[in-house]
Image (cartoon, rainbow, N blue to C red):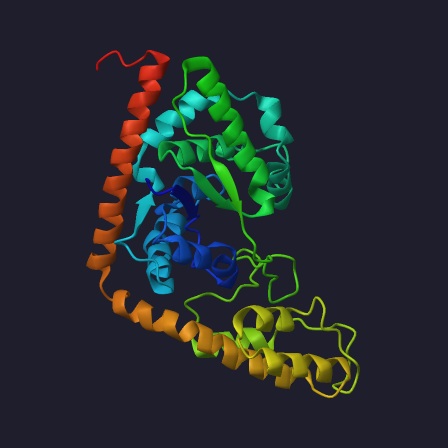
Amino acid sequence: MAKKRILTGDRPTGPLHLGHYVGSLEERVKLQKETEEFILIADVQALTDNFKTPEKVSSNVRAVALDYLSVGLDPRLVTIVVQSQIPEIAELTVFYLNLVHFGRLLQNPTVKTEIKQKNFGKEIPVGFLAYPISQAADITAFQANLVPVGEDQLPMLELTREIVRKFNRLYGETLVLPKAVISKSPRLVGTDGKEKMSKSLGNAIFLCDSYDELERKVMHMYTDPNRIHPTDPGRVEGNPVFSYLDLFSDKKDEIKELKKRYHAGKVGDVEVKRFLVEELDKFLDPIRRRRKEFENDHKKIDKIIREGTEKGKQVASETLYEVKKSMGINYLF
């Protein structure tokens, strides 16, 4: 039987962080031997709200690819593709624009939330509003069976499924109807206690952070705001320090004991944070070592990106051919 095909990816607006690892990278590494993975560096999507500073996007394409290699994604098993270098995706987007009405885009809860976060007001770029349609083109260009998403991204995938069903109904069975693979991992809160770790919020620990950077960030982490003295009983639930320990440390017995002491006011925040620094450093160390194998060899990274993109372009071209054939507009073929 043919392997299931997966489409996933990231916006290259900066280095990837622990939240990316928990939310998707770890699962991608596990699945790379069992599935056919296409990983999209979504630079076009990143430009929808960075169009005034395109250099912020282009300068991070190689950095994101380096993060992929550092966490253990094997270019012999996965295909890394740069979105902007696949013009077939843009052409599919144009076709799909005719299958979605304006009001449907405005109803999308994910889009509504992001519009509010970015303070567009009434000046919403059309490219930003329509990026869920571009995502549908990403997914269908590679005829992906499975798309790993967090629960907040489910509305985006549902729009893709609507587009696929409508296209197939109008023109005949052409596109694969993708299914969501919901991440089982909890969303990683930021170091400031905000509900999401984010580059833009400045509350992220990056996969490329040095020991000193890691230490600085952890020692400034939000803990229990009601705890004034080390002898005060501390709250463990919802405390980012303990959330990180649960996810990134295998010393379960020590963590259990630490929680008891913290709850009883018998250990201070500094001691708990020191423990977290060492556990996170232990987790990041093999990632840093793999990074050293690639980071000074830009030609090797570029070769991986180029070859992956060429393979992705071939697959997307085949999809576009079938789409045009189904629509009856393959005049020159």
